[in-house]
Amino acid sequence: MKRVVFITPSLKLGGAERSLVKTVVAIREFVEGVDVIVMSSASTEMIAEIPEGTTLHVLGCCTSASPLGWIRARRLLRSLKPHAVVGWSTYANLFAITVTRGLDIPLLAVSERNYFPEIVSAADVSFSRRYLMVLLMRTLYRKADVVTANSYDSLRFLKKFLGRGPQYAQLPNTISVEEANVCAQVIPEVVPKPFDGPRLLAIGRLQPQKGFDLLLKALAEVRMLHPWHLVLVGDGPQRAALQTLARRLNIEHAIQWISTVRNPFPYYQWADLIIIPSRFEGFPNVALEAMSCGKTVICSNCKTGPKELTCDGRFGVLVPAGDTTALARAIIDWGSDPDRRTLMGSKAHDHICAVYDIGRMREVIARALSLAA
Image (cartoon, rainbow, N blue to C red):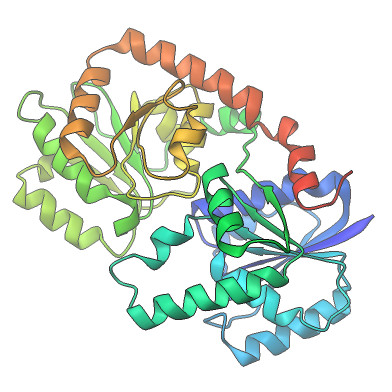
């Protein structure tokens, strides 16, 4: 049996972190032990979700370029003697490649959990930082044995960007549908207020990538015709700016703001429509979770993730990314038709059970990480 070490930048309430936990659960039967090295910090909520028998190591360093973090990680890896080390997202991948150089580790894998071209082209990324990230990624990722991504299109980009050398494998997100249904039956941490109209829900970190400003503008268009409300669950650096935007659009009274919750599933159970207005995604965990609960999702058709998850709109609603009018129209169309929502939600649930449930994904994930034949 083999020992596997995952390296992640942080362990907080978030989609990438939850997908890591699910991956650890999925491979347990294929390995002797699992360790998770956290570069910066871990929240108590996510620590509680770590599967029993998994050892957590929190380095407390701030960046992937921390020499102290390198020293601590190399010391750990020497003592653990793992069969495989897996980086989880861009900075952790660079860190993993750096700290494993010269160590006797049979398998080094990196896993992109977002769409790299969108990350480096973001407005807050300077030209020098963008150049450095591209250079480091092109140089260092080729030293990995296996390069993985959570969507087909992201993996296709990596193959073209890096070229020959590593093996390539898709490592999609997974979910326990049975566990999700159990979690959905409890009372929400903050109960949504009662109001008329379809129950509209958005969940995620309040940051530019997630496109909640676009959703607020779409909601303002919706409210020109229907007095509908939105429940928005999450925290992040854009919270104040989004609340200011809501006031400017005169829709602040139509939004219930709820901070990040440990268990989002009761909110999916409550909702009629779950809206994912992201500018870009790797593979949207919120959509995966909502669909597992038999709910209709409306997703921005960004370059990677939603199109693949919904099978080109067969199991969810796709709208052009960044088009607030199209988003508003979809909310009105689907919000006004409960029978169509029920049918779409049922199809979405069956699709997730057939393709992404953890029972079906165990061997897929293990093969992607070269842990199973």
